[in-house]
Image (cartoon, helix red, strand yellow):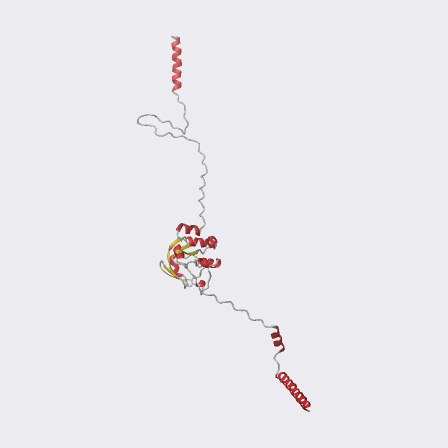
Length: 272
């Protein structure tokens, strides 16, 4: 009986201890499981996560500089013009000018068919300076949109020079129709090959030939003849006076008279 009483006392103490639930932190919630109250979420306080700095965007690749040879190669049909641009070094000039100036360039690009219509051997008859001038004659030192050719003043200045008699290029425009004449060749713009508001390349169906290639240049003035030393000496002494001339004549006359007298005396002495 005593043993059972002790066991009952310990059991009652254990039950009382179980009735005291431990306290949870105030910032935690304990969800009660029941069919009408299912657990949807459990919230708890967590230490803030350290945020890594946002990665810098990768730099975009730089725009490649304008290359006139690449543009013409992509368009196709300009093999002869490309060869001339390379041999005359005008291609490098164009690319450099586009990088270092704000005015831009306009290039009239003759097609291979335009060059093939030239007189056979014409290009080979040109020296290096003339080939350079020919290409420069196809270039304007500023960007001109197709619709703005009617605003230009004739004769239009090209990069070959500003001589209106030998390097004149006259351009007339009406809308997208552009006509050109050099005094030797008349042609029209066949279309736009490339345009980026800095470089304009327009196809032309004929090679623009300046009059400078076909008109004879005036000969250089001949130097004035140099006076001889004797002429200079006479000029320094001045012209002879009439008295000097008459004196010389009188002396010759007197000498002739005495020679005549001597001759007559000799004949008379011979006969005597």
